[in-house]
Image (cartoon, rainbow, N blue to C red):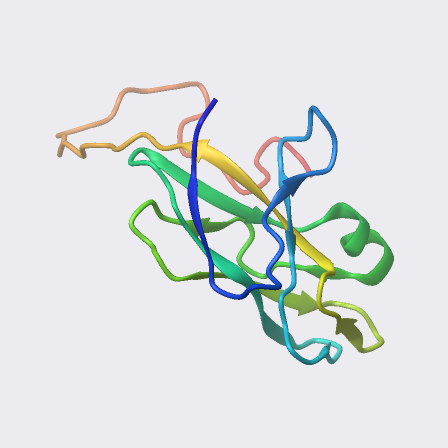
Length: 145
């Protein structure tokens, strides 16, 4: 099992937590002093109150919670957001309100989920040409909608 160091930046911060034994994502909890109201078609930055140290070769991906997306039209505009292994600042979540009503984030609300993923580094090598495939340059819906 992977070990991740964390630093509680506020005494009232809740650490990420798996909701079920087989959950892929850890719930992230808001750690704000005052309610954060996100107006329709607006974004807000939500603090979590902790920082972490990911091992080299890993990243944390922040993703929307499906319940918030379905019931309240709340999502992450940069989903999945990436937290790199060399970042040591507070984990914060950018939320967007796609709904028609203001959405309020209260301290302790589950606002996103975080998935820890292995990262492969790539080396790019310039080539004279690329190999041919059946698909070729087809993209952006070339196989239908």
